[in-house]
Image (tube, rainbow, N blue to C red):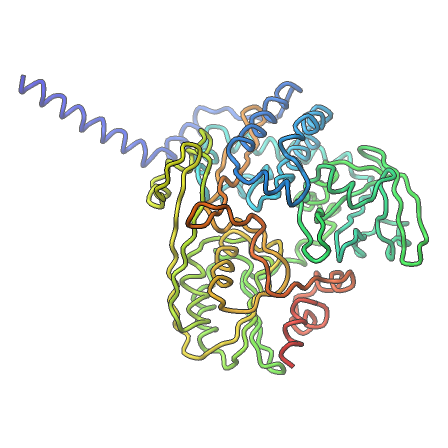
Amino acid sequence: MKKRKMLKIIASVWLILICSWIYLYRFDLLKFMNEHFYKGETKIELTTEQKIEDFEAFYTTMVESVPYLEQKKALYGIDFVARKDYYLNEVKATKNNLEYYGVMKAIAADLNSFHTDICFPMYSNLLGLNCYNSEKVVQGLGRKEKIDAWWQEIEEGLQEYEDVDLVKVVYIDGKYVVENDCLPQGCSELENYELDQIDGEDAGQYIVEHISIFDLQYDYIHKQAYRGGCVLNDKVGKEVQVVWKNEAGQKIHQTLFMNNGAEVVWSYGYLFSEKYDYYHMEELQEEDVVMQRDDENQLEYVKINNFGNANGDQLKEYLLNTPYQTIVIDLRDNYGGLNNYAVKYLYPGLYDEDVIFSYFWKVPNTKSNKKMSNSLGVRFSYYDRKDKDFIYYKDTLRYKGEQTDKKEVYYLIGSDTGSAADTYMAMVKEKHLGTIVGTNTGGEGLGASFICDTLKNSGLVYVYYPSISIDEDGREDRCAGVAPDIYVGQSKSDFEMEKNLRDYSQKLEYDAVLSWVVNQLK
């Protein structure tokens, strides 16, 4: 009897050791299996039924596992749940894989979530995903080969657009206008025109209501929903009748075309060929952290594009030793990273006091969300509330100040400020630690990280955000990001000049948000 018991104990120990070894080295095993047992794919061939099945899986996950759909509907006027048939018809109408990818990405964009997306099929980028379930998905059997095959599909799809003229329209100061440096040949007359109508409907309303890979946003100055962009072309997609109008009321009528595939070409074509590099992407590259001293106005201008860079120690040292009392922190392009970056590097260089910031969130208790809620790290944040439909959490950040000289701090924010940058700005606003200028952040900093998963048939990888922030009593308080203290937008001329400028002295002249701060100091 004792011998049998001892054998059971030994067997249990061995089972624990084997399971632990598999867990610790599971990705090495996946790598070995990928290299030796997976033959790879060179072609993505999807039937209409398979496309529909993948759409249904994505749609169901969003409806069941995302808690802020009603809040988004109220703000943007787009009912994601009710638009299922519309989305389904768009999926069915896709003629090739480039279009299918564009439609799926556009459906995800309707959620207006800083973290929700159908990821671009570029394996090196997927390796940078740092969220729940990402290791399992990205290192999954055949994942790289599947993504590489998708890369080839996109490249082949680009060939249809070699002789297609694309024109990008952007939303600036309440209007949709053509980017001056993006006008196709023969269309220079559109430079001073705005997009007035599409198929007899107000252009702004049309663009918002039709799916696009450009996210929905909300203009708190003009009080209306909009999309950041719209791509028109002269050959491919749905034919539309377009009317342009200038300030004098003169109009230009054109027959053009709209297609989500063309939006993909505009946004990602530069990865494949210079002829699709409408933005001149290399010229737009910028350091993760830019520190510029303005002796004339006696201020420091610091632009931080992410909270995941390797320049934290340098940034902290710079801020601690600046001779000026005024600091401008520009987070308008900061997509986030790690909360600990602001805790460890940014905050200590600006303030002398210590602050504690607690935030609360809830997550729908669904099968998909268990990829997050079952995580050991998240379980430590569990906030005890009895609710079978939701799981409640709390997290606390502790900021320690090291600055010995009192500073006046201004923060510049916008719709591209999100995730960990949004967390930091929520803390700044709650603690009244500076003047915030610009427009609302992209939000999604007061919750857990995002979740990664894959679509079974296509192999496309998607991410989504399962949390909504609440207060200590469980009330949902907002889903629209951090609001600035001072709303400042940009005119078309400001936008056209500023987006291509990296020198601070030039930005000062054309950047309306930065200029507002400097003018306040005079």
